[in-house]
Figure 1: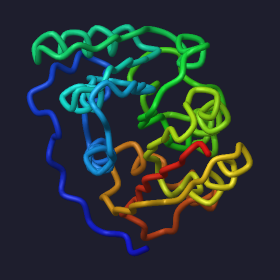
Figure 2: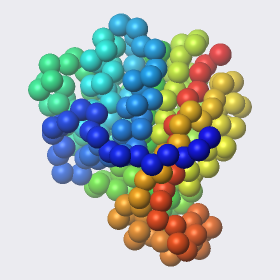
Figure 3: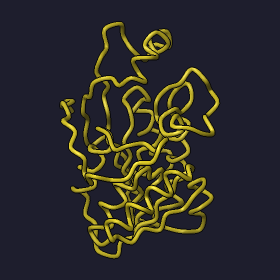
Figure 4: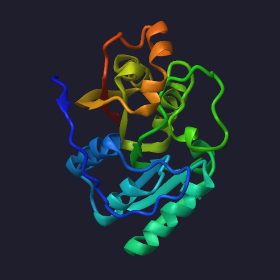
Length: 228
């Protein structure tokens, strides 16, 4: 599957983004495009893991879905609630760990743009904007948790849509989801210029074998997995 260049257009423009909340970027757009192509009946139950400003949750709600959005940052929870109120869209926005806050519930669709940037510090940040992107030394701390938790969160036939960097290993994600009994594939790839976080870690990424000397484009992938 060829990787295409991506031109960013905010899927839900003019959203409130409080300090420390991840603003919609190219990965948000790619996931928004995937969501737009996904069949979604009115009344479908959707959960977004790591909602940030609530851009994707609002997109699902605009199609008549019943949306639960979860984030570990209170600033993101407040931003998503404010944006839902301003857009007159009903969102159930919860604070805390996604697995804890959704325990015992089942959904038709999981949306997630999790933290996925490899970081020299193996410990996950507990505050500040870095919580939205730092994800351990291989970038998979949240990706792996979502993959192993997804089957318990989905109804039969339910779908997971996740975006992450190609640096994290798309094949590893597909393999992990398959081992959980899900049918998984990469449905889209796109290339975007390196942002300031990756540029600041160039030397470390090269040492880890995650980047080459002249790399200046990051591949993003959409993983679609369906519970059988």
